[in-house]
Length: 117
Image 1 (cartoon, rainbow, N blue to C red):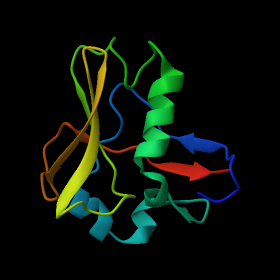
Image 2 (image 1 turned 180 degrees about the vertical axis):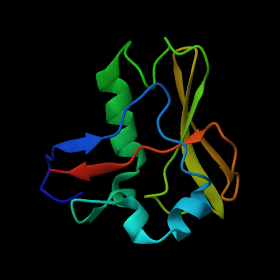
Image 3 (image 1 turned 120 degrees about the vertical axis):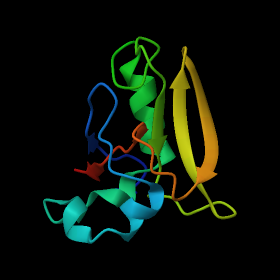
């Protein structure tokens, strides 16, 4: 992230985050589909920003134990790990990081577009 050790980040929130497709679909899509204010939001679709959102949200949506269903957020801003896509989940108040198929295009796969301001 640019801006030195501290940066303010603006991200999309909602009950579950937007469903934008699989890791591969997001990474391979044209930049214009993810550009806001001249910045490609995919660069900050990372564990660090998602984790900060989870910690700061507490019992507030989107990623918290108050959700009736688990969340599954992809990190397309990070590279693949041994060919697998990284993601974070929140289930019953527990945060977990997982690796999965990069082409897994299920409806519950969410993303967290963000930009540094």
